[in-house]
Picture 1 (cartoon, rainbow, N blue to C red):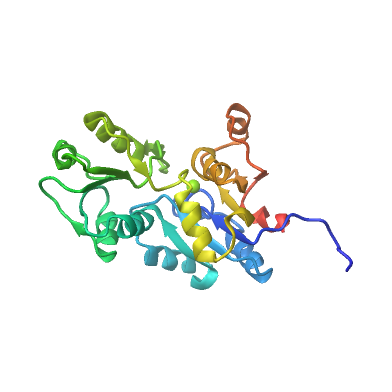
Picture 2: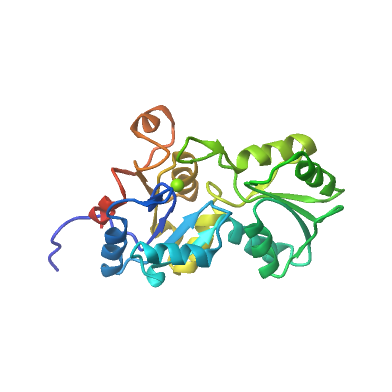
Length: 263
Ligand SMILES: [Mg+2]
């Protein structure tokens, strides 16, 4: 059979959201067309985000408002992936949460018991808009002998239109320092998110491509999972960062609009 062009093909694509499909409230130009082009080529897609403040169905609605149909791809959030992980490995655990309400909602939806006071079997920490001395103290006192420490993710900062804000990692580090425990991290760059995404697509992980704007989460997760990566320059990391870190993306694209060129 005649091959018209030599190209790398991937059986599935994982796509980050913030800084990749949109930036704050603004869609990245060409994002919806790029997703549509991939679907037309029969490439399945799943959105993978460390965001823990938004429910998955809300993300579906937001994608739809940008012209990306709900069946374009499932959304994996670090909050949902954390709940799925605990439902699988600690189904009867009581869980103390220092994080957004969505994290507690996802845990409850997955059948776990969220406890607000006293010691817990598991302490989950993530980005927490309401961080306070009370909430830090609550997290500290939730630890007892044998309590597991799970972090939804540990992004250092969160992008914001007025400038960077503290990320989940700042709060995780505080609890780590207070307790001396290392957290198990669920979100990117943990490969747990890649495994969940590949399972949803039903394709072998090593045939997938990870697309995102952050070298230290998106591209590093791809590296750790042993898969190809595409850095888009519409968010956190720029070309200078590529040169000054030892994390090397397989592809560097100006934006997600250029993604179909890889297929
Ligand atoms: Mg991003």
